[in-house]
Image 1: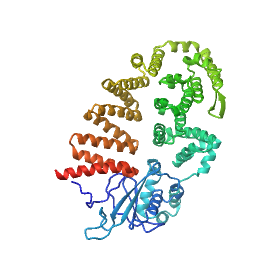
Image 2: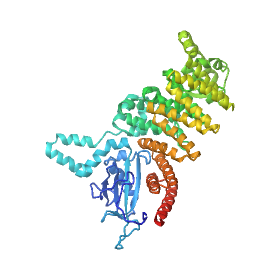
Image 3: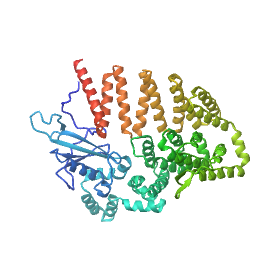
Image 4: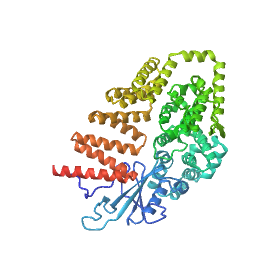
Length: 573
């Protein structure tokens, strides 16, 4: 049995490693603090009084940034760094005293404040912070280096200790002027550049927002080649913002569209995730704009996905929706829709649309005329090829899929099921992985809707296998969650456990703490059902540690009650 009041050695709350006692370091700014550095890259500051937590947090943030205060003041909690506290720390014994007193009765008030920068920022500062902590402050290290080398190496050391930083105003001016190449160069040396650009997506000036979309798309498209890990982090953050109804996600969909447009080989598979947002009414204009931008440059890439679901919105009551839908289909040059589009040319409803350069006030009818002209132009220029493509088996499968969507929207689920199954057969025979995965998922969703869980699971598994082949981890997580939900609904918890483990591994690699905490809690629940109490307790404790780092008070309290109950039961046993 674990005693909640037991004395323990201090561990980093962000990685669970044992930590060394903090010690004095220079320069000191706000109070008489001691410092430490964990192996995971987190830094920690000791406040012996426990009353200077604000100053300790600031000092820890500055220490993590290697005393680059211009950088430190730009960082945002949760986005740029994680923070956590350990209370009841006794620096004399290097032990945690949960009761606030040693066994001799001495009062302990010490608090350790932890800060760990995000991975890309840590790449920039981590080695310097560790070196500084191990050798003393920057000035002393520079002096020693100067004495050893005669001065030349000292100059380089001072340059290394002061990385290039760019102000918000500099970045804003370059975004406004469309200076993408300069922004790309800046982003390669300063990871805060892309963060400052992302914040421009929420600017009060609508014109600035659109320029930020274009600039960020261009920069991340370039980073996909030069710094793929950093680009991937941004793409994942944008994807989660798109799917999180509680998040402020203006510009996320549009920016993802620009990134895919400029780096299709790397991020082309994410089109299906964008199309998944079609069921969210507020997202539709942004989604159609993004699909149109991608399709203008890479029409086959868009057509290889289930883009025909856009057809259903050409008669949407909202001008912004049907206007962006017709604009997108014109950019894709979707010949299948030309007859419907031509009937829309008299629609005088007005809307605002950004065409990639200017924010225009136009009408649905004008957009329909332009779209029909683009589609007819491509048919006249390459009519034979278009006719061949239209008569091919893939076109037949696309039509079947489209008919299935229409039937599904009319509530004719059994007829829709037959259409999807015929489309799936063709896509599989033609070796079209993306369409096969999309159709498998759609069929599985339909089976779930009809209450046929046993038929849905193999289809989700087939879609997961295709995503595994394509290295699409985000899709694997989303599909794993659907499989987990079905097994749990059928009370087949043993079968859900491997998918929870897989999902946990994937989100840990993505550094998604919230989902990791959720999966660990679910894993603990299953272990508890299996009477594997110690394994359940370990999972709950890890989830508790994650939620503590996130400051999720409600989840922390639920886990604490559960952990206490298990510990009490173990004690009775």
